[in-house]
Image 1 (cartoon, rainbow, N blue to C red):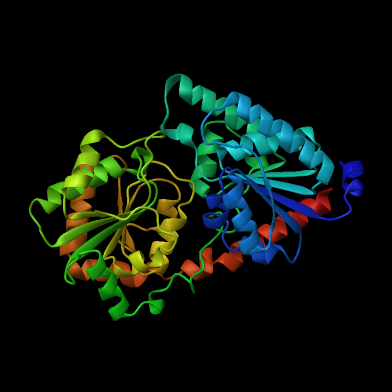
Image 2: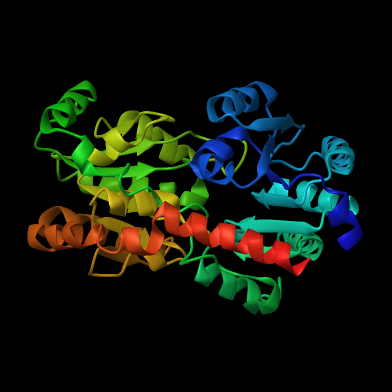
Length: 393
């Protein structure tokens, strides 16, 4: 390892994700901070989007062919390409995030003898799988962790799950700061940026009455995010209440974990459900919402819940790791069992009608977020980790 280190003329840091949107969303803000300490290259698929990201963030990029699905031939080509790129460039650190990037990136870095190999675990798809698919995903994760020098689950609950299922040893894992993979910029995610006039204009644009109660979901519109249960619960409530709206911000995925047909039909046919698709800027939707709802089945550490809390929104979340580390039941929101439509419906009803309790949640939601989960806190913890690993070489 030391021989390889002394061959490195510069301290190069390579960040690898599957698709460029992860660079923009999951790691937003890190490029400016870490450019002062390392020669950074961002690696992902989709060359045009990656090139645009590099230009916007003044960061070097390298594109490879990666997909979120299992594509054996393409994945082997990506592994081969990345291996030779690492051998040529000799990075000091390769830091991967997202499952496919972790597999290809860690394997290539291990084979290329990169001295510091770091992988972020931001969620485990296997948590909701059974049978052969579970064991296949379990094996893949074991390969990634075997190749990594250090593993970083982004919540304490996720770390515990990984220990309990013997995915990785406690000594090889570490949760940075208080969790998350990027922290939250509380100055950016603040209601102060949005006037009543601006909020009213957006409501009018979306055909939402100024007095409507707005439930908001932001994320991928897939089964694992609890969207089937959310639509069913809201549909039951909207049958009796015309003054509520459900605002969905995110993309549908027809190939990976699609929604039920009846769910899609309800979204299309219910005028009280408004789907606006993917939005580059989500803060305006937080600003007009009355309550944020996130009934996901599994997460690592959901940044979107951090953002909602920072925007002073009361939250309804499922009792899963990450979400239950941000939201405290009956303090800044309501925690419900996952996959429980009746509990979700009850919580949504309570949030709408119990005004004093909702106001208490909203008042408490932003408290402590900056101190525990602020971006600079996370960045300093990650920088300290990089330096500590360098010192160990």
